[in-house]
Length: 575
Image 1 (cartoon, rainbow, N blue to C red):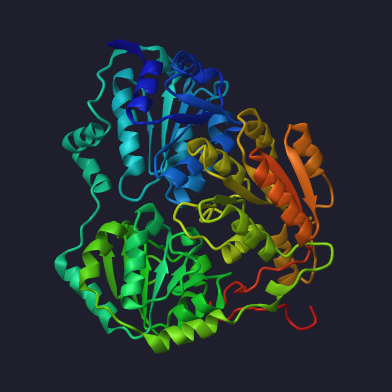
Image 2: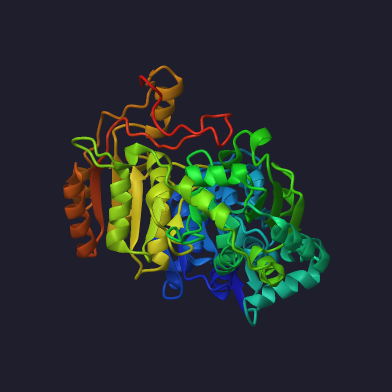
């Protein structure tokens, strides 16, 4: 059949199983939005308050479901407003396809109104990007984009389409199934096979990895976000239990292994637990699964895991030996590699090692138990939310102290239930991500834990939440400051609090009311419990302004450049 380029976009998205698109219209993309209007029964569109919110929503949709998230934006500022969201997805390996439209081809390169070279802008932060100049290439490009976004290490792909391509007519032939697109791509484009087909370790390499695990006396698993992405959480648990190995998690893997499991040591790194950081330091083998040895984990690389060897398993060969040299490495999908490795790993009990782990787990900062007058301990906030919402709730955060407190205190039990910005550290991410999750999973309970500094960057998305009747609960952890930055100013900059005090509006309850959303204010544990109970039972969008002390700290903490075992557990004397 002969159809327009805009119709090709719609048909290809439906063909790929897409049910929801997030976006914001504009002049260059009008043809696609006009076609979307005609096919609104086949493809739902969520209009956000800002393109960046749409990009984060597509990302949240992808992280919660494992499917590709899709976002639309127009040319110029519409496209550039996606950049932070695309970079966020890139750093955290989230499969997103961004479709932008540009000015007509004759106007490209002439500084035309709302023209931008978005493929040039996004080249460093996408897995691949395309500009489609011929409508005959449009369907194949969209199909290829989805394959690339999902294959190997997932990531964002951008497609830019000049406006006249969206109105041009072309013969269109539907695929018999979405999977047929990958087969066609593999058959027709040999240069893409490296991207599409993950490496498979040899039997000899697997035996070498098993031998090093079996010989270890004090092994520790360092689980990264790749465990969740690959769907390898069951295999991780089997390995840990079979070989009696403690599990330390990166921020992106806090939901990869049940927090309340005896072998879980929770988060590792700058704000990691005493148990995780000491386990890494004293181990004779670190088994890194789907992890990239971020600087927030390793800190001083010369003192990281000095007493042990490194076994690194990752789908991306570029990560091997990039930050930390590995004694043994296996390149491949974590789930596939572990399923082959597990039969070779011996069943063991490591009683002495686990006893040391348990001792370290008991060493926690005393501030965990305190509640300053007129404010709420962040630990109570996280634990109470879990008490009410349970293991099935999805938790999103912004970036800052509240994010670290959530990672430290929330007892995650199921994969894909913790959605946060790790690699890029994007303030403003969480509200859009929560919208994406709620749209993807309408029956799920989604709770967004936000800092007041981050939330003021995206609170315009309250309009989206109210308009679509999304029953999100937003907990604003309100300490009246850019807390993470203030904390560093307090400890390392002589208490010179330059531009971090947020002693000006808005009144969060009045703002929520302006958008038609009910709000509560809480300044102690009892008030927070009552507010959260009421918000949860309402089944509607809600906001809780939760007062936290201005100088509440995040401990443990590894000062910049120090070894991960050199942790601050309390404020230094006299502070």
